[in-house]
Amino acid sequence: MQRRLLLISNSTMHGGGYLAHCRAEIEDFLAGGKKHIAFVPYALADHDGYEAKAKESFTAMGHDLQSVHHAGNPADAIADADCVFVGGGNTFRLLDTLYRTGLIEAIRARVAAGMSYMGSSAGTNVATLSIKTTNDMPIVMPQSFDALQLVPFQINPHYLDPDPGSTHMGETREERLAQFHEENATPVLGLREGCMLRVDDDRMELRGTTGARLFRAGQPPEEFVPPCDLSFLLSETQR
Amino acid sequence: MQRRLLLISNSTMHGGGYLAHCRAEIEDFLAGGKKHIAFVPYALADHDGYEAKAKESFTAMGHDLQSVHHAGNPADAIADADCVFVGGGNTFRLLDTLYRTGLIEAIRARVAAGMSYMGSSAGTNVATLSIKTTNDMPIVMPQSFDALQLVPFQINPHYLDPDPGSTHMGETREERLAQFHEENATPVLGLREGCMLRVDDDRMELRGTTGARLFRAGQPPEEFVPPCDLSFLLSETQR
Image 1 (cartoon, rainbow over the protein chains, first blue to last red):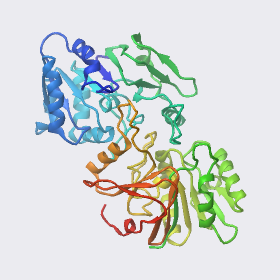
Image 2 (cartoon, helix red, strand yellow; image 1 turned 90 degrees about the vertical axis):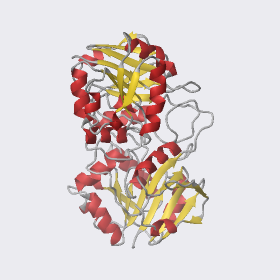
Image 3 (tube, helix red, strand yellow; image 1 turned 90 degrees about the horizontal axis):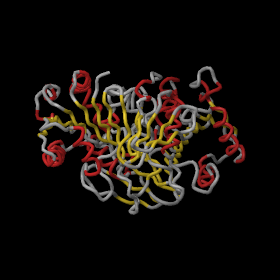
Image 4 (cartoon, rainbow over the protein chains, first blue to last red; image 1 turned 45 degrees about the vertical axis):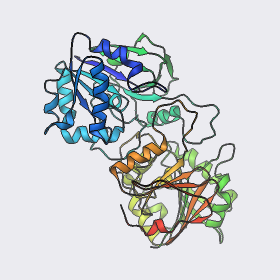
């Protein structure tokens, strides 16, 4: 399957600047001259402010960025983009807007035709099969939880290990993912803050620092430390 | 409006037993002889196991409890109950099952006719206007986020104050509720673990320990320490 993806767990590391920890990976992903990037700001409410923040980072890397929210039809705005970048925020609001603007189909078609896709946090959630493993609050109801389905598994961004000192009684992240697997069979890759996935067609690599934890229904979790090959997750068809 | 509700933030406090921290409030709520309690176990996957756990607690308090999942039509199982108790777990799975079993309408009708309602965590979420302020993972998609609407506002159970020492970059609970208010006007009451709401028709009291934090769109949050009267939240009609 033709696809070029960079799926980032989080846009900012504690104490660092916006996209600073993944800048080298982004530069590698966008190598080969100035690229035109279409920015999708819908996970946050302030589209102009979010565009300005993203533009500053990508301009510094030598690329051109414009947000799709200026276009009468946002789906038209990705027609001649080299790459779409879907920023983080609230995953429900983001997916709802992707449906309402027609971007869900437009992005899928353009990725299949060779446009690169970069996502961070909520932008990574919506690249997967569904948003059923987001950490976000369901502040709006999208028409479906089905997402862009650029990869055939689920991602949990900002994956967080249990805090042994916590007295809070809400479920741990691992308990939440176990509940997901009581209702669904799809594997879930928990991406800790600091790591990301680079996908080139049928090849997928875990990159960055920290690591990822793979959850499958009824099986013990598996740990992966970057850099490592995770292409096997692209060829599994279990849903 | 006729209603008798006990809405608990969490069923277990760190280091304590199931329902131990709210036992005195439950006993007061169920006072006046042995009551027949219909238990709704659908927030967890193991209905029999969940019923056994709940039955043990309520039997020790001198009441009779049976889970609705044994009935061919779960809505029939609440027809002669004195009280329904909706247990915690995953709010999406719970609400989805309330719709699929017809319990959503049956519970609303029986509460309006005098049946008492007790909820904990997910069972408290579904008593409010909608599940849009749950903390849970959206592991299944219910037909609607609209809930039982026994009270005209939102609750965030397990409300958690920001941890000043955290290096995790996921949104704090307060940031998530600010995102809710970018899309919705309804007030949200954050119930910290250890506190609960007792509602008798148009009177509502905050009880238990810890406290609650009230969030309104565009306004600074307000703190409430139990015991205190919060009846004003029942008479606001803003949605």
